[in-house]
Length: 129
Image (tube, rainbow, N blue to C red; front, side):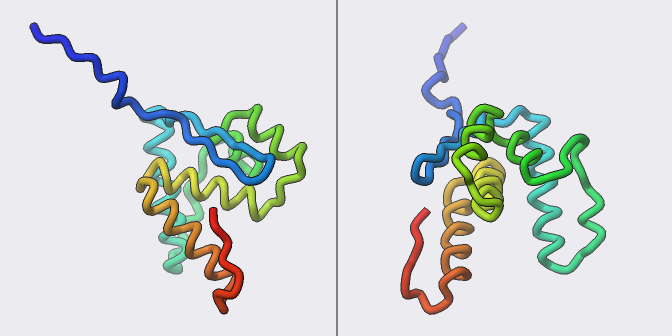
């Protein structure tokens, strides 16, 4: 029987940094990955005008902070909140991590670029993630 070590191919946690803030998102379990995929799909349906998509919830997640603690380590969320992260920035971190785990790095980067352009429609001061 052949034996092959695949350790080098295993996914690693995602670390998102902005200034002094670092949020760490562990590699999702299969179950959490399924839930993140459903949430991502529901989010797109809401953007497309399907209000029924808002009915899907994960037990125990009521606030943005709850969602942050769901996708990031509790310690990194607590540190970000203590450092004074804004609600819009925390939401962007969450959405980036969801896109990263569900659709990949390119999709997550495209999301951040779109947010940057939406916040600066004249393109005069591009923000880089």
